Structure formats: structure tokens, C-alpha cells
Image (cartoon, rainbow, N blue to C red; front, side, top):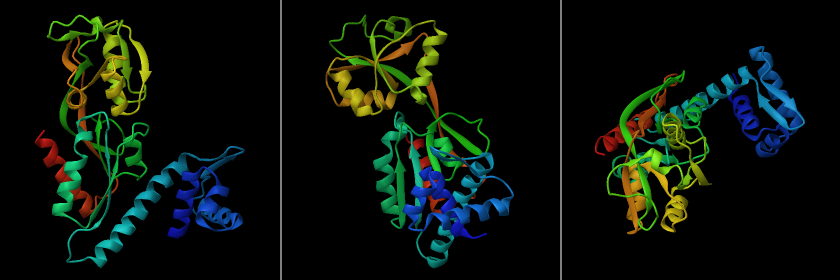
Length: 299
């Protein structure tokens, strides 16, 4: 199998267009199309569906895309390992850290400790709300992720690490029934709520809790950045519900913000370390995994 064709196929899928992929790869479009034909002849499967809007992978194409990313990453790591045999660990390791979780507080510690222990390892940290980390691991774009969830996805291995309890966060001057104790979900129905978008794990956990309690929500803003939510809460524009680490971060940035535990029901999510159970882990990735486990065990 020609690895150049695999690289070309990945670029086509990423770009969503053979024309754009040809420009990115600096090759003629007919030559790139021929590479695709050769791949489809090799696998005896149609790999892409073409339309006026571009191209999307078929089910067979999705499988090849995932394996191609893993193969090329392993080949790159093999070259590094051979050249550095007997030397210190080196290579690139991509790690996803769920932004609305305690994982988001680990980026600086992770970078600092890796520089001390394994300076040859290049960390690529992803902290994105709009991407499903489990899917990025499945298709080979990520090697490790700290994310909310505890498993159930084929091809992935989840290692539950801790349970994050969620807290109510508001400006101290905000008008709500506060006696200093736990806040019941039913008390929050009329309050203007600032939350992550609906596809976010934190938001889903909150939605489920309100639905189970038969309570409605008055959502006035959906924000993708913790910093934006923090500023809006500090400005008194609304209230929010966040995992403890994020709630405490918001509170630390403003003396006028208070946090309260939740009751009826309590909201919580499991934070897990997720890797592929199909692709062998490189030595650098294994070193990063061990450090992540060490850092989370101290939380």
C-alpha cells in the first residue's frame, strides 16, 4: 500500500473537496483523482460520495480514514523511535482536555511536567467545545483525551477517574432565594441561565437533571467559552451551573460571585481517560497517559 495515497485520501476527506485537496497537496486534480481510483480498486469499495457540495466518505471510506490516520501516525512514530533509539523519549502526542471540566485546569501542569520529564515530547493540546473527542480518537486525530463519559463506544477504552459534582454560580447581588445552603433545581426555573451549547456534555447533564425534575429553564445565552460565561455572570447578566473546578475558577476571578451546591437532584458527570483500543499506544503517548493519571489522582 502506497502511503502517499493514504495521505492524499486523508486530505481529501479533511478538505471535503478533491479540488481543494489538490491545491493543498500541490498536485494536479486528475493525478489526485487517479490516486483515489487506485485506492477504490485496491479495496474494491466506493470510498467517497461526490456531489456539487463536495465529497463525503462512505462507511468504507470512514473506516479507511480512521485506519489511515493511525497507520501514518505509527509510521511517523516508528521513524522517530528508530532515529532516537537509546535516546530520550521524543515525538508528538495529541491530547484532548474537555474545556468545561477539571481537565481544563490541567493544561499548564501537564505542559510543565512534560518539559521537566520528557522535553523531547511535543504536546498538542486540544481544548475545543465544538468537537467530539471520542470521534477524534476513533479517526486518529487524538491519541488521548480526558472527557466526560464512561464508555459504551465501540473501539474506545474508557478509564473512569473521578466524578465531578456540578454547582450553581451567580453574582452575589443577583435576586434569587439564597439562604447559603444547597439550591434546588426547581428554584432555578425562572432565572436567566447562561450555559454551553446543547451538544456539550455539561449542558446535556444539566438538561437531563431539569427534565427528570420536571423543571423548565430560561436560557438567555449559549456560550462556548468559560471566560465568556464568567464575564457574563460577573456582570449580572445571568446565572450558570458548572462542574466544581470551573465554578471555583469563575469565583476566583470575581469576589462578587458565589457558588452553591445543588440538591434535588444533584448533577454530576464522570471524567474518564479515553484511548483507542484498536491502535497500539506509542511510548511517548504512554508517558503522557501516566502523567495524566498522576495529575488527576492528586485532584
